[in-house]
Image (cartoon, rainbow, N blue to C red):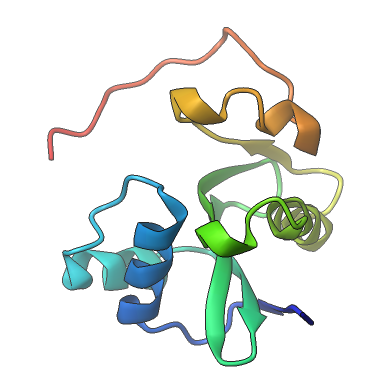
Length: 132
């Protein structure tokens, strides 16, 4: 298996929807218009490909100067635990540079995963949740 990583590659909402469903991440996967807006409005998307198949994604919003919100980190179930998630984060960090802090919100089931990628748990966050 040779995984190819791309920065800001053209993505199809159908492929991203399939990836989200396969990965287990909770996103509005059946709303392709919303998925397209998520793709269009992201500043940086690092994608992982096995041939023509999208198998991983790191989607982020950033000012490229101070902070970056990693809004999606997803890998297809059959490719999980192969280092793709770690590589996506590493490539995102390299793309952003040393001045930019990387932030994310974790699903409860992934709380043990992110420290393995270098994230530090913090109690200094606030959230106004979405209503839909």
